[in-house]
Image 1: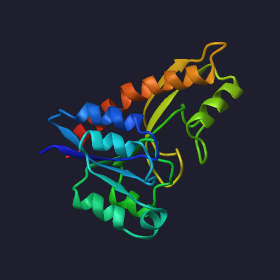
Image 2: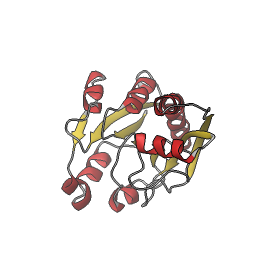
Image 3: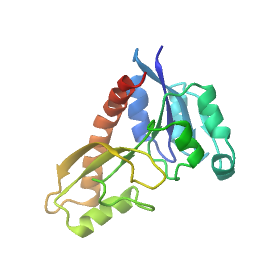
Length: 191
C-alpha cells in the first residue's frame, strides 16, 4: 500500500507543487491531502489541478479542537509535510504524529530561524549579515519554530553583489530539488 502524505501550506505552494509532481506516478507514496489556513492560498488551486483533496481550517479548528488531527487519522496519513506553513504546530498534532512532521526552512538553521523568520525576511537578514553561504534546512517539527532535529541541509555560496532575488532563486532551486527526495527517503524508513 502506498504511503500517504498530507501537505500544509499557507501561500503559493511552489514546494507543494514539486512534491505533488514527484509523487504523482509513484508506486510508493501519494499526496492524499493538502491543508491550508488561508482560503485564498494558491496552493489550493495547485492541489485541485492534481485532483488532490483540500481542507481549509481556521485558528479555532487548529488550536482548540482535534478536527485536523482526526481528519489526518481518518485518511491514514503517514507523514505531515509543512511547505510554507506559517503557524506553530499544536501539541495534539505533534503527539499524533511523533517524528512524522517535517518542515523546510529557507536558511541554514540554527541561523536565521524562529518566529517571524520566513520568506524574504530570511533572505534579507542573510544579506544584511554579510553571510558567505546560504541554503536550506529540512527538519523535524517540534513545539518551537525551526528548532527540531535537522534531517538535511544544502548550501550555496553567496557571491558579492548577489541580490535578494538571486539568493531567493538559488534557495528555491535547492528546495524544489531536495524536499521531495528527502520525503521519499523518510517514508522508506516508516513501517
